[in-house]
Image (cartoon, rainbow over all chains, first blue to last red; front, top):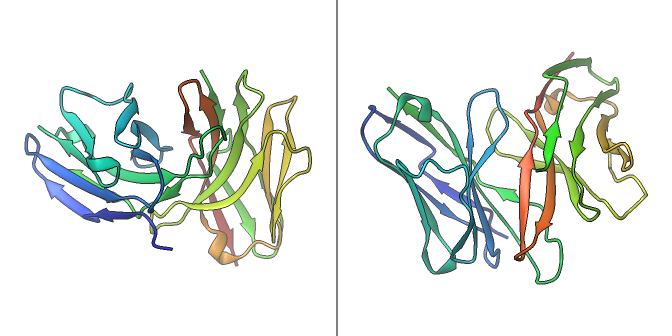
Length: 117
Length: 117
């Protein structure tokens, strides 16, 4: 079974530039998560999709971050314009959520390390 | 709101010895999952072990086992016969269903474990 795919693995941009990250979840997984992980901290949920609908974006800085999930499969997370404090690892994860059940653990991609200079 | 607390920022252990990582959580839910994830320097989050709240028996996976105390809301991870490859960040995570039909997954701040020869 193929895992969660993310690209790019590394990105360096200047502040005020824009950047986009791509994620392809495990086939059949309805739930897709984007997390931001600042060095030395635990992952913080930015946005969660159930199929192609957003179910939680309460911690997404909506003035600069946006995300979409096309046809309930691939997802793109964008930052525009980037700030220095956006330097972090961005993790994508997916999980299977059978109707009426608790669901399974989340499977993670390798993450994208973003450096804003 | 649910919270996950890991009170040990760093731990170290000698190879072949046993170490226990602590985690406490807060929730009013009765049905949920708890997980331990490992994150090596490669950044890939890997599931170590999971526990379903309705199961009284503690989960085990080879050298890894948990001590799940539901009433105390405690979920510790024991690593036996520690190996150099166990060196990593370890995250405790909590997943519970939300009304509306999706799972919320939150993480603790992590414990950095170093295994020394």
